[in-house]
Length: 343
Image (tube, rainbow, N blue to C red; front, top):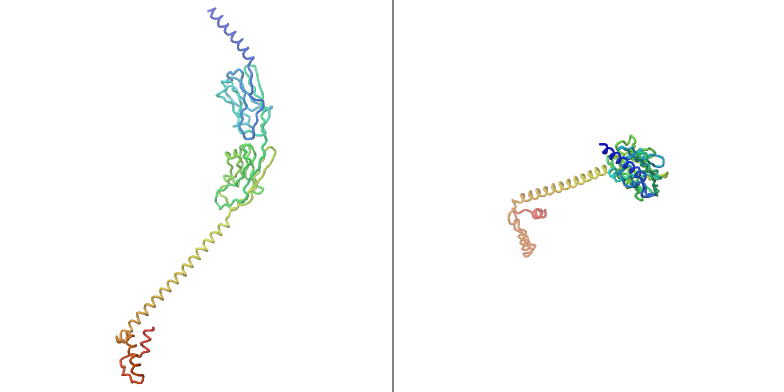
């Protein structure tokens, strides 16, 4: 047993000496001294332990200048409120000594010196990396003409950044006249009571520089000028969109439709009256013709043949106009016969 105890003590001493020598050579190394980026980008401040041993049991801290950004210890993480939801460590890769910090949707105010500090036992090691965020010169593009809508419609007031730049880290305000109706800042939205649940921006579209404001169920009282203001890096951009809710135009259109319908009905009524009048005249003519035919039933058959009258007239002229005509009793006067034919 005494020999076993000596062996155990010997290995403990060797392990402590080896670990002491090993720890004295531990360092943290950042891959680059400076990292370049733009507002809205995601960046990785790449750092790792050398030699590449597990950092899972170590304390890891990241600082921005003198402000703490991220703290990891015993599996627990603490994040600065200004970076909440936008910063992380590669927990799965800590076993390989990877202590890199990932920043998402960076903002111009977050440029500057970052310090990575790793503490193990009583030893603290650190390295630095500088984050440079380039300023972006952009303009605000708005609709050239008014946005027209009918009451009750959902509309979009189009505004976007040119060149296409993420606006997630910017402050955006929408005004109707001089009244603030919507504000976006640091991922938070605020809406005027009069536009509650009616005004919104698409957070996803902000990454593409789309600042369009959606208004739901617009009414004539919503008509007017809407101003979009963007604040970024101490600069301000603005654009104006005019909204016209055409209630009057809609009424005019309905009146026009009613008037046209009335005119069409009147024209059809006139045409119908003309058709009825023509039909009545036609029926009257048919009745008169039928009456004439019925009144000629007593006329001798030979008088209904006009050729016989012409033959008698020729015979009279041949025999001489001085001859006395035979009695024409029973024969209707010629004028009356002609009346029947001419009528």
